[in-house]
Length: 462
Image (cartoon, rainbow, N blue to C red; front, side):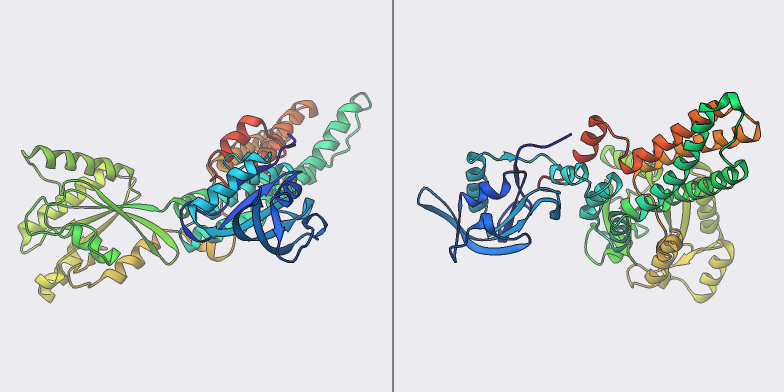
């Protein structure tokens, strides 16, 4: 795939601002912009060095569009690996569109979503996993997701995969060589070294596959459903966690009739809190719909926070214990966190008894902001951030995850072939498939449909 045309797009968010950046890339990028740029110091832009800045005006036919700052990046020294110009103009939406339309009239084409990064990939400036990390970096909204995206964009993940692929490819070459001399019954590949290599590849693949559980959580946030009967303080708890009046709070039971969602970042990890409608028997049609949505959100959540009602006596305690057991039985795979809210209503003796009867219970008062920090620490404990803190490679991309699983399956087939003393030609088939899935991750194996799907999710201008 080669690009012979020159593209243009707004590289900064649309709308008014102090400045905007218009990016132009392609073989004719410099000469096209030079035709509409007048240097403030009468410089010839075509003769200027790469990575230089120039003040001047965008003008055409005697009409001055704006005073701008021009950045020049030549050939392989640019982000895309081809001639690139970035025009920093004033942030008026009108000015942005006027300059872009002028460049389109001069022969440029509007860039498609992700086309600048696609060109960077095609021109060897990034491999495919690094290119995908660019999109993750733009979308990162907390410290952890930013850290992972930066590591992958700098090649941490792809370097690990490339190293494994190279070692496997070396052995594959020896296996293929054996097939060429099959009649002489010659063994070029040391089987003991091959066994050791396959074990090492299997170990790394399993570690990367396991990291996806953490990576997916970090990238997308942990969905946390706050549930309980009406008027136990679910909305108050959400408001306290977010430190804003996000949900309506009222003494009237059943105030929350729909799910309310918002995100909170705790120590770099995103948590998506869902305040649900109180669960109870009701004849109110609207409230019934809200309760139905509550059960849908519980099914989607990774963590369920159950707020118990006020427990003044043993009868109330038994009711709460039965409700907890019901949630555990209905959602056995969910992480359940039990909270006894409104701690200001209890005596010290009652709180001590609740802790005995409900192991692991958290005591809070959302209204008085008691126990909120302990709640945050408990939520963080559900995320295995050890790999993140140790700067290990973490997989966040579902396409990479799928390719890793398929590669592992092929590696395990090769291991079985070695143990069963299968002929080299049969093992070679599985080795080729493993190499194929490794190549899918870094982009050594691609097709137009795959690239289209990946880069279609990028923003225009990147």
